[in-house]
Image 1 (cartoon, one colour):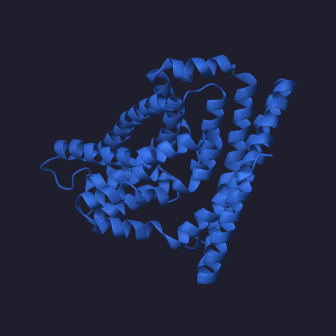
Image 2 (cartoon, rainbow over the protein chains, first blue to last red; image 1 turned 180 degrees about the vertical axis):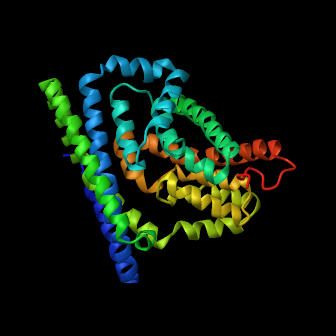
Length: 161
Length: 187
């Protein structure tokens, strides 16, 4: 029988929660409010992502994913993964289940890494805010540099894993 | 806490967004089921299996995120990082932010504060890159991508953030030399 890691994580979280409660009940109450808020924000997004995963599984042939994101395609697959991540308007918490789904559907480790990192760091949805906050030159530099460095990371992942 | 200051309007907005997400999800689900019966079944299985897999981990992660938010606020982190200079500052900026939660929408204003407090541009760039380490989400990452992937990524995020900071600063300061406030928005 496989050990249920979920229970272990729950135990750890409960332990931390009790420690926090003993140290500062008011702060802990605020923490739980944050938890509720995060859950309410993230769970519906997870539902949508899971539905999309199902739709892709049902209607996109595995061969298509392998030919785009499979490790056999080398650097090309990392770039496709990065482009996918850049366009994805994801909650960070939804990034890993989707990346795992891509892996299961035939994507390589490099492509999965490319997707994860660019979904976190290169957001088309955040471009306007970044330009407004730091200016166009900063935004262009950061996003392009991130894209290139993630590509390098992807190559390392492809070689090591 | 930010959530408190913004008042009940934010909560209503969160609920509204949540409802929209659920409705859109159900609509796509329904469309898939109408399109092909087996397709609908595949979607149902995918949703059920993944939720079953993720729910305990997600609850644990949400609790820890809440605790981190109040015990280690992003503001505290940026205050510490704003004061540190040199390589030590860069190393801190390339590692500590992976503990910070939130989305990019929350991180950018924080980076601006960091910059205004005198942090060099390399530290600001390193901060956002290191934030992508997302240590609180590690249980999810291990579950879906395996611990080898998760460990390698967390380990490599630090040099990645340093490289992003140093190279970005070189590019930006080189390009905008002689202008006021390198890399900042022209005001």
